[in-house]
Image 1: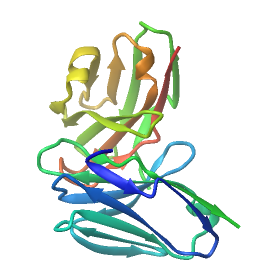
Image 2: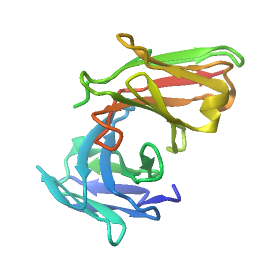
Image 3: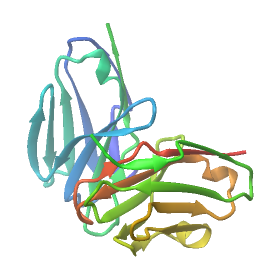
Image 4: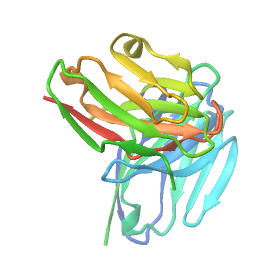
Length: 109
Length: 113
């Protein structure tokens, strides 16, 4: 978790509200992936980013490689958005992805 | 979302026993990764393959773990002598290239008693 720091570690959201998750990198990240892990453990791909911004429905993500961070915005939170969100970075030196420790999101009615 | 298949979903072993898990990557994906996720949500890269060749593996994998990706058969990861500290979720991912989007299977949850 030192090389990829996620914040906050946990988040409680009321349905219909908006929020943002953040990852700060102390490695030279070249690409970033965001995942949602469901209670059964499956990692669902949300975004794969080179530097820039992508949007998919109520989710929007940005990766700024110069300032070494990435954000995930959740708009109009729904109950099914609950789970643990992970960001993971790739760089030219390490094999595989370097993951953060996750943000546990709970959406309540 | 992902078409990576992992079996079994759950595995329970005693200390010192072998533990073997399998992974079928998405069709057309030549690169396979294995990761370990512990109960503290720490992910550790273990090993990766391109087709049947090992690209990189960490020290732990070299000593107690064995892995292979034979052609026309599932990839496998085997712990030769399980230890309590090996209890974790083992995730397999596949991708089109070594630096490309990775897609994960549902994982094998190993419990070592």
